[in-house]
Length: 343
Image 1 (cartoon, one colour):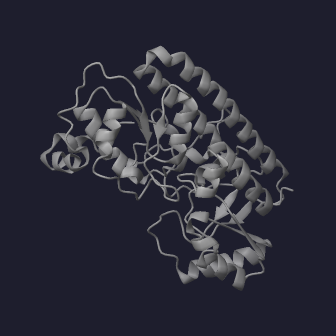
Image 2: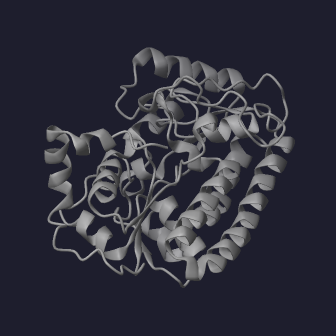
């Protein structure tokens, strides 16, 4: 994708905006730059970059444990740290505006850095924020063209209206991993074969995860679940043909209305839903988020389970060594199996 903020660098206002991020890059020698390390914009991209690079490059995730990459602000030295390392993997989307700004600065002022946009080439497969998932056909991959591609993708959407949570789709994840491998190979040809081989091996893991979700949905007796949080899972729903209802909507800034909560209460009881899903990032001190408590109090539901949006990680998962695939398998797959009655 083209950087949506690249124009800011060329203009006076943009020079000021990106200058605050870039620090002083003029004293960095751009000659004979080696790829000594790299940074990725959030947890999943960091994990994928690590999987692809293996021992060749050590990637860092600047976003702290327990935090998500969007809505996050970097320190003033991060741009310089990335320039010193040599590689930056990010998503060119306004939801990660800080990463857009850093990428624009690096591309304008420091050509030797490998700036890799994981969304490159996926423009026609991106979904809008207002996309409605259709579960009319009760089979897996009901919204694809038969080749694992979304048939009604992001055509006609401006970039500010695109849902960025594409990484939740294990099929599109394979394309992003390939893009990362290609970008690293271009920047570091001596290790190109390593990146290609690592990406192929990891793609096999993603294919296995895709099959797990397909099998889950094939066994499901219900296609509707309730999530007490902002919906980051549209790509997952679109891929496999189920509906994740949330009274909170898709925008993290939207407020939950009493009418939305009331409608959700009715849905839980009408559908006979017994388990409510929630984000563990919103569970303070191990307690259910307030909306979960409301739904458990006012409906016939009796339990709640976490699912993760995978833009961040928690300390306990980090201690287990869980990356993207492991968190999907250990957290999301069991939760969806439970709420969709796919036992």
